[in-house]
Amino acid sequence: MGRRTQGHSAKLHKGKGSRGGKGMSGSGKRADQKKTKVLKLYGKRYFGKKGITSKKAAKKKVKVINLEEIGKNFSPGEIDLSEYKILGKGDVKEKFIILAKAFSKSAKEKIEKAGGRAILKKIKREEDKIQENKKS
Image 1: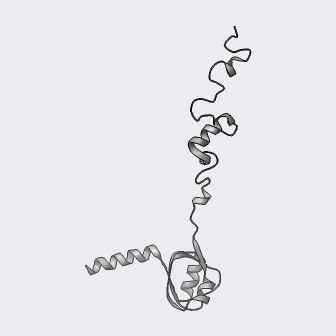
Image 2: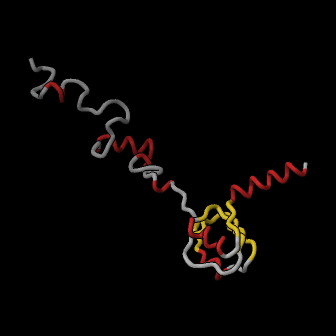
């Protein structure tokens, strides 16, 4: 008894249990005996993290603009801010017709209170389609 294990426990040295498997399996952090083979075949790109590692990085950031900035930087009339979300910080005194991706509640109320209109980008597209259908 014990010839196949050579004085060690049966689990570690009897068969292929301590080798980490075939091929590249077991070539993790401490597999120094396989690193030369790994570097020849794959180069340094085999080790370390790859690609997107968190879901936060994949989220798109929305461009935002406040009403006070619109009041300062734009003249009254029709404005196309279709890539922005309009936020309600500040006041608008002039009449603006704003086309935007989204509006906060307070921004929409302030625009309409000043006599302007807040038009969502989606609704504008649907209105254009209805007008085109009426023409043809």
